[in-house]
Amino acid sequence: MTRRWSRSPIIVLATIVLLGVAASAPARGAGGPYRNGLVAFVRCCGPAGIYVIRPDGSGERRIYRALADDAPLTPSWSPDGLRLAFVLGASRPGVWVMRANGTSRRRVTLGSGDALFPSWSPGGRWIAYADRSSLRSPLHDIYVVRATGSRPRRLTTARADELHPAWSPNGRTIVFERGRDLWRMGASGRDQRLLARNASSPSWSPAGTHIAFVRGGDPWVMASDGTTQKRAVHTAKAQIAVAWSPDGRWLVTAPLARGELSLVRVDGSTTSALTDAPGYANSWPAWQRLPASSTTG
Image 1 (cartoon, rainbow, N blue to C red):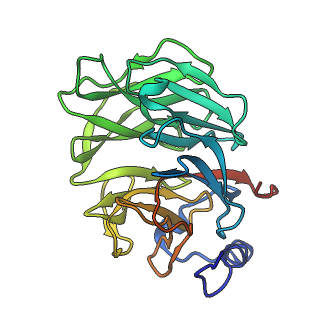
Image 2: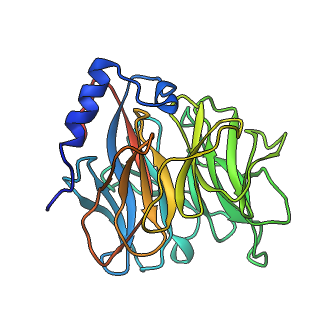
């Protein structure tokens, strides 16, 4: 597999960590002794399923084989990096959890029929997700459920489609899509307010000081209160999703149409392809968080 790097990203990341260099304001707020683990993502229209890959583009493997090409999957890593939450779609509705190697799959909740975009609370006890209130409703709301299984609790009731909840690192706030905008609310569902217009796919920086999102097909970064919105880089292809690296230095983005996942420095100074699978759709990335002393699996 041919990589498109001027030098190894692992070497670059290690050098940055050792020297304590801060390349941008968001990176300075990264915090936490975390290393970048595997990137989980969805591949479809052929060998469909959930895949994992190392940040240097090596070690790609499928850990879950989808029953159909149109399975949403939308994986999310648990805070300890040992499990993945995901969804299967109409074939097996609800929110599911499995080990990082794809084994020991179990359903956490059946949901209401169209669960999407699970997101773990930072303590690992809860999972937020989007679901329709009933099979008769075309709109999604935001719910939470215990990671061990419980009756779901509905947090939103707006007359708009609500998707992609993202739990803040301190556990107090959930950012989510409402229509074409990003909103934020307390973990209980209270104090809902508009955060950013024409924005989607929120992802928190490790310290919770910034949020990455997609606007107009490009990855953007803003402060957690919605101020200082800045485009990280203009991409040749429109992107649909973005995920922040655990060390706070990188974003991984996914294209709207078929194409590769890309690694982008938070300051936009470097952009490189992560996957190398021409002709397939690679989407919905999630980055595994590892302790500083751990090694990538």
